[in-house]
Image (cartoon, rainbow, N blue to C red):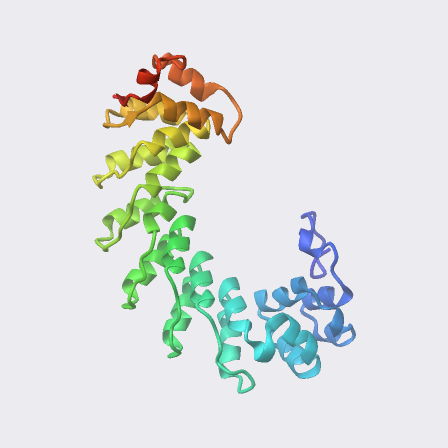
Length: 294
C-alpha cells in the first residue's frame, strides 16, 4: 500500500528500510508527520517531501526538526535548490526563494540536473528568477544523451551563452537519433572528434555509424574503430565498416592484440577477420604491414 492506496507495484529498493517517519512523509499528512520521530527520517523520505512538493512538511522539519532537516537538505537548506531542480518541483523552488530563512546558495548542478531530467519548466524558472545563473557543459551534454529535444530547444532559444561540450558524442548514446538530428540542423557551432564514431563502433551501434555516414557531416575516425570493434567482439560493426566503402587501414598485429585484450567473450570477431583473408600465422613482414580494409 502506498499513500493509503493499494497497489501491485513492487516497492522500490530504497523504501525497503523505510521508517515510520518516511511513511508519514510519503502520505503527505502533517498530522502523521507530527506523531513520528523526525530523527528517523531517511534520504528516501526527504526526497519524497520535495518530489511531491509537501511545503507544509518541509516547513515543519525546518522549524521543529532542524538537525534532521539539515542532515538531508544541508545547512540552511543549501541542497534544496539542487534537489528541487533535479525532481522538477518549481513550487519548492518558489518556497525556497521566498523564504527569508535560507541564504541563496546553490550550485551549477541545479540547472545541469534539470536539463538531464528534461525539466524545461525548472530551467524557465531559473531564467525568470533573476538569480545569477550557474551551469556547465553538462546541461547540453546530458540532455543530448537522454534525447531531451525540448531542453535543447529551450537552451537555444533562451538567449543565454551556450556551453557546448561533447554534445555529439553524448547524442550518439541517446536511445533515438533525435538529438543527433537536432544538432545537425541546429546551425550551432559544435565540435566533435573521433570519440563519437569510436564509441558507436565499440558499443555495436551500427545504426549510429550509418547515421554519421549519411548525415552530411564530416565523419571523423581512425583505425581504432576496427581494433575497438574487435576488442568488444562486434562482428556486425566490422561487417559495416567492410561494406561502407570508407577508407581505413589495419595491421594484423593490432588486430591480434585487440583479440588478446578482448572485453567481451566470443570468437565471432576473429572468425570475421579470418573470412576476410587475415592469416594470423603470417610472417613478421605481413604482421606489421598496413592493409586497406576497403
